[in-house]
Image (cartoon, rainbow, N blue to C red; front, side, top):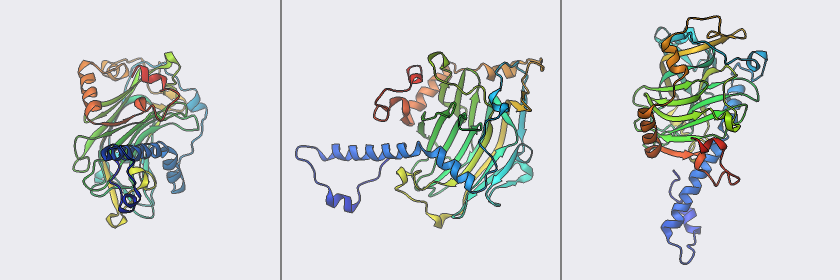
Length: 346
């Protein structure tokens, strides 16, 4: 991850006697990568500050609606497909976000003055959410495209996809995180096995009472299991909206802030299409999958009880072996007092 030493750094660099240069260089690269990861762990607060100051119409508050959500559902399904004008509202960006092609396409734009963002009209409590994205092309260093589910308030739940831009020719970092009752620090990061700027690709979140599965083009990249039995809170009581934004995070996003945004390439654009939510909609304190809807059906049962099967686990292991670049469950330097309890079962 880290770049080569600068000329000035090399001129001050004194090689300790008896220590091979490649060992010291490897250590320097590792420290730069750790700095990048450490800074990115604070990105949620930075993103929310940007969205709040640039006009995002959403207050993080906990009300009775989110506190008293129930997980006692029958399995009737609600399917929201298709158009962005019926399912989403643009919340900030002063014209930089646009719904196009009769609602079939949505674009977010970032320039030096502002980014942009949108949110879903509905809140959801469990479901399978699919969205196709095409990310900022070229030199995207310093930019972040965020696509996530979140409830409201300081003790909020959140399920994150965030795409950290990079210099031309370098891979995007796909950053994932899970918050439960306001606590995150559960980051896993990946380099994708394709160019996410050349075409649209599908990024999916399957969220049910047993687990959260992150997938890319149908391939699972991460599974976060319900570990309440060992004292780990799990997102299951707070309904969440879908949010997305494109914003400038040059202070941390690329190599820990060492690489800044090149504004000569602005405006930067990310595009969205083919939204689908097979999910339980939360409205007026009740779920569309409540016991009053007794028409249980097998297709909804599939996602409501779904776990990774043997084929899914093999694909997950392939991704994590070949494309994972950071895992909080392996970072003993960051957590010297011990890894998170859920790491024992992940």
